[in-house]
Structures are given as C-alpha cells and as structure tokens.
Length: 300
Image (cartoon, rainbow, N blue to C red; front, side):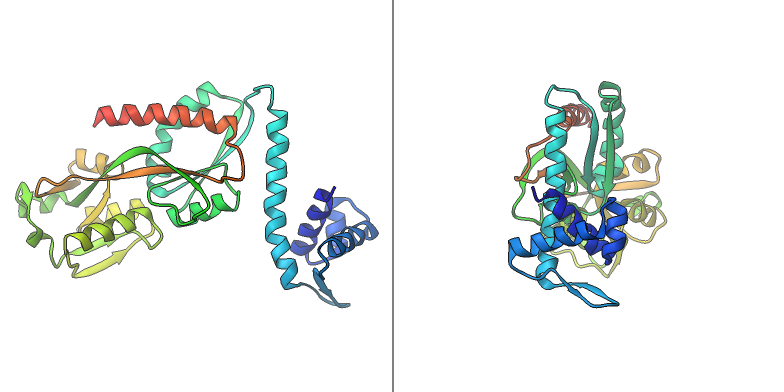
C-alpha cells in the first residue's frame, strides 16, 4: 500500500532532509529512500533533485505533494468513518466559516451542540468566503459555511439560512436622514467596506453598483467588528449583516437607513467537497444549525 510511502514523501518534502524525515517517522534512512524510490518508479518521474548540500523538490514532486496531502487527509477521514461505523459520535469536526457566520451565528449554535454531543470536539477557523471555499476544496475542513457564492466550482453548495443586510450610519447622524432615504442622500459618502474576497464586500459592491451609488471615498477593513466600530465612530456608512449590527442598533450606537422601502437579503451557504461523504458529526451539526436558523428567523 502506498499510504506509508506518500506520508514519507510528504515528510521529506517538508523537512527537506531524508535523515530528519526518518527521525520524525521513526524510519531508517534506507527505508525512507526505498519509499521515495518506489514512488519515483510508480510515477516514472524524479521527485527530488539531490546534491550533497541541498534537497529540492522537482515540478513533478510539487504536483504529487499537493495531491498526496489530499490523499492522506481522505485516508484519515475514511479510517475515522470506519471506526465510527457503529454510530459512536466522537472525534473532531473541522468547520471553516466566513466572518459573519463564524463570529455571530455559530456562537449561538455551539452551546446546544456541545450539550447534545459532548464527545465531539469542534475546530472552527474563520476566514473570508473565498479562502474558506478554497480550503474546503483542498479537504482542509469537513464543511464550510459562507456568506457568498463559492469561488471553487467543484463543490456541493446548498443554502441554509437567509440573512438581512442593512445600511448603517452613526446614531448621532440619524437626524440627517429622513425615515425613508432616497438615493441622492447616499451619493458621495465615505463607505466602510470589507476586503476583497469577503461575501459581505461582494454584496456591498453589488448594491452600490445596482443603485448607482457613487462613494466619495472607500475605506477597507478586514473584519466585521472593525467596519462596525469605524461606522460607530463616524468614519462613514456601510452595508452589514443585521447579525453584526443588531446590538449596536439596540444600544443606540448605530442607525439603520431604510432605502425606499427596499429590503436587502442574501443567503448563507454550506459547502462540501463532493469527494468525501459528509461525516455523521456534520449531519448532527447541520440539524442543530437549521433549528437555530428557524428560531432566528422567527425572532426577527
């Protein structure tokens, strides 16, 4: 079986040294060399350029390195699923979430999930939509939760929750706005935006473009909290999820601007790799997430 050979190859590539790789894997140097030789024979290509002082991976080796990491992750996942065949809910669920979901939606879901499945550990990594999509495609997460369209084509994408987006300004500026603002009042403002690759940024760009709103200046901040605080402090206006600004609105720090009775909504999506079966832990998580989504919708 080539799993051990692939693990050896990945370790050599990362350590850039046969001896250190052997020490890390508890293998003799001849065993390490044999694994690499067998792989080079299998793929009929040279994987490393070797000299007395240097060990460099070849272009073919780089291709195998990326695929080998995916194969090893898939192998480990398959092994865990077989061990969990008798419905023992244990192990680790790895979730990649975009900022709005990771910072505001998931915290409301975790207490119930932990109470129902105390033997499942959860790892949540928060990044923008573009990076989460790429990581799911590379099998780095069991599931991804994003607030925009997936950037990777080869993924399973399904909506799980509707999200309301609102235009916000500092509360102290509320008197400058009528109850129902017109487009002319939104022209030539400073707008505070998320970074490129963010689902929130994509949506904001779409709204500004669709309604012909011309910013006087654009300030980019790579976190929801940073954008919200900038607006609270009077730096400009923004378009954010109601999840992000709800507390600030209730505490009279931000005001929502209603544009001609229009309501802006988008969907939250979960993304999966089509190359792996969804783990039972993920199924359990989605069940609680869906219930939480329904509760949140009724509360609006």
